Amino acid sequence: MVDITHKTNTLRIATAQATVHVSKPETIAAIRSRTVPKGDVFEMAKAAGFLAVKKTPDLLPDCHPIPIEYTAVKYDIQELDIVIELTVKTIYKTGVEVEAMHGASVVALTMYDMLKPIDKGVEIRNIRLLEKKGGKSDRAQIPENIKTAVIVCSDSISNGIGEDKSGRKIVEKLKVFGVEVSDYNVIPDQTDLIQEKITTLCNLSYQMILVTGGTGLSFRDVTTEAVSALIEREIPGIAETARHYGQERLPTSMLSRSVAGLIGKTLIIAMPGSTGAVTEYIDALFPQVMHVFSVVEGTKH
Image 1 (cartoon, rainbow, N blue to C red):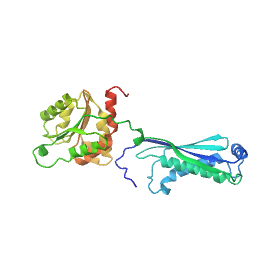
Image 2 (image 1 turned 30 degrees about the vertical axis):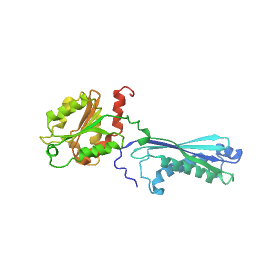
Image 3 (image 1 turned 90 degrees about the horizontal axis):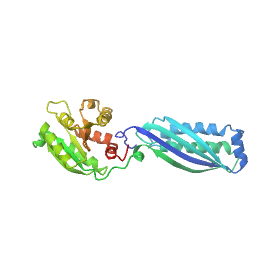
């Protein structure tokens, strides 16, 4: 199976369609009047579709078991065609398009099985995905050319003791989203130096500044205080989202004092200093956090 542990839960919706074609009007009449010998075709097929959706991971090896929170079946009779639409919803890390297509297929197959004694010309046609929402399919387009800087706050690394991995990890992961880092610096975890660097970057019209390190509980961890003093509009949900994401993976994530907000039109996020933590922060926040630039410019609400 594909590893989805880094993903976050979002509302996922998929609708699939299948068409059952019958060969004579009498078959349609029997379905409508519920006189098909094997029973009520629509109700039996719908029940079979519900079961199929829930059983999808039992039959398809790469499908993840997921919580199915809603399934609905609709029928539309168009002359000799019965058009089936099956919708599945979940709040989870991966989509439900395969579940929807599997369910629609079984609805159609059940109808075929129930109708074949009275119509030898029944056919199943056009099983397809109509629509999917959630996850990557709902991501807004990432703004281009966001002027970005990364600041690593570390006494030891700035003194040549040890090698920066967290800042480099941020740079690496941002490239996946098409974000190039224009300024990368390692500075001591010292309030005046942190604030001076951030102010300089803001004056140079940097739109996003990511700071790593100095958000812990050591007496030398002053990044949170330094950044908070400069923030004009805090965005609490950013740090809350990142901590919640981390807490599901590492119980001590609650101790992070990360903070985020706007300095003018510059987004600044202060995150922990470990490589694992910054990896989680980028996974938790990007690319959706970049919606802030559209909001700031007034193009989105």
